[in-house]
Length: 405
Ligand code: ASP
Ligand code: MG
Picture 1: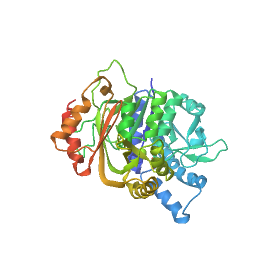
Picture 2 (picture 1 turned 90 degrees about the vertical axis):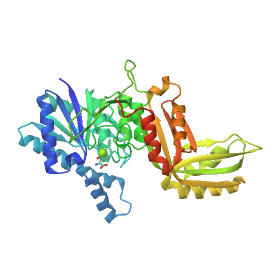
Picture 3 (picture 1 turned 135 degrees about the vertical axis):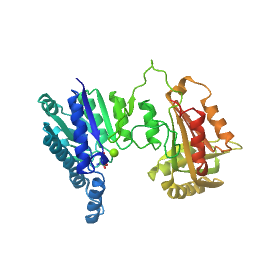
């Protein structure tokens, strides 16, 4: 008999009918003999509605009260789901985060889980109950209600699976798995049966918005097998696990991209120790996240320095950089907020030479100019003009044979 933690997202419990469907699914799993702990999100749109209500009354609601408010969304769904199960004759018990005692720190609105008490869950399971736990919430050591940040129910599910040493943590959502790339850009994109935590982290941070990134980090740290599946379509979904050395792996697992990038360059800065921090320090102070960074080889005592930021931060980054450039006596500041980043990702890259070259050759054949390149052990990213994004992704998808199983 297996112990499975299942998480159902907001769309999966968005209406009474859908809650009934989820209940049916749960009953099927229970009949197969598994012990089940279910984590649910608020009904779709509910958390946004609560945030909007708060903002109508206060432009900066206090974190503590915001958490009292936001946690109600999930409290509604745990009760409703249990009622739907009980209506079918199934024993089910609902628990809020503080009832379980999902102990968090006291950082309201983005609290971190410190400890989970598994006593009540274990005894409910031993009594043959389906256990239904509210996602996204916990309480601090003084009993204040806390929430884990938007999308936090994924993290609740993984944390529970880790604490209970569950056999698998299944995330039911509105997509049926993780794809080789966005099917809206490449219709031939294929669902992956399996990816590693590392690959998923690269894909998630690059815009494959399937799972909260934090939940994947958590799963990796505690080695929780994580599966993404559709609530609506039958299928095996995508299993996310540690790298299995006995498995033959694809060289490239997927192609991620990020549309909303911008780059900034300062030309002709004096090339002396400390310029990187002098340029990026003021940017960090404005809380602007920097992604790629390139510094050229110096020439005649000066150098050029380029970095990328999220497009929303472009204007403020440009202002900051212009000030810095003046104080450093740099020649010129230039920028471009119509760029995108395309990355090929795969753990198999470690043992295969020539991946970068295949990527560059493919883009060259399409006449796509690369303006920046960065690499890590399992990823190669390039910056290209946004008008070539679709073409770049499609041609790379073909070049790396990703449509074939
Ligand atoms: N209901 C919360 C949100 O909308 C948490 C979650 O759904 O994971 O962000
Ligand atoms: Mg979600």
